[in-house]
Length: 268
Image 1 (cartoon, one colour):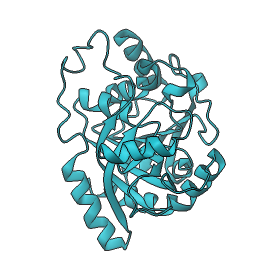
Image 2 (cartoon, one colour):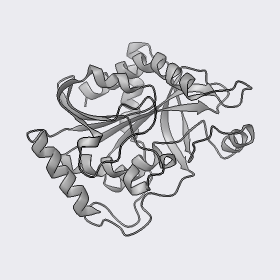
Image 3 (tube, helix red, strand yellow):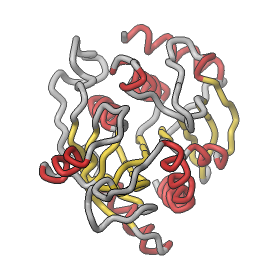
Image 4 (cartoon, one colour):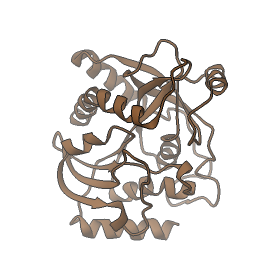
């Protein structure tokens, strides 16, 4: 696996004329339009990148965008991979490994999620303060010792300094933020009412089907992470949700997320 990661990173460096990003960004369902705000110098379709999976989910364009945001070099995944698509966890997290070798020093992640906390409303932005992993751990198997330790610590999994910076920016920009614990499940079904009650009982504030594997792998490699969930439905309500609505609500909230991410990147 390590050799595959190195080969893909080397291919991308050649394809991008040795573009060296400082920040990696993963854009979730309905949030891909942020990629259009990047001053792109190179865009690669996943299908063209050796070793890369291909995104199969509607709302995920499947492109790797290299460029600048607020003068900082970034690489953004316009669409991610999910365990429920049938990929192995090593494939789901493969792009994060590659981004590390390309040079990123911080990872920003976003997702659309179902609200568990009853104080949340559709359209809220929830800064992820911690997570609960209900998926297979992506570090199961031989350890890639060159990239990180066998038993990585997950304290401060979501960087406290970045959360403090986000809070200050949100106050300045008049953006309402919620804070909470993200529960990552396998999907692809939306959760039952009983599952949402269970997630609430174990300490969850929002639930989704992504993000956790990527963050675990990033922390394994020592990359500080910052995560935001867009609350696209309220899981404990009687409303029936669907994927189209999740995309729609994600796009509505994308403006505030864009403002937050751009200001944070500018002030790194």
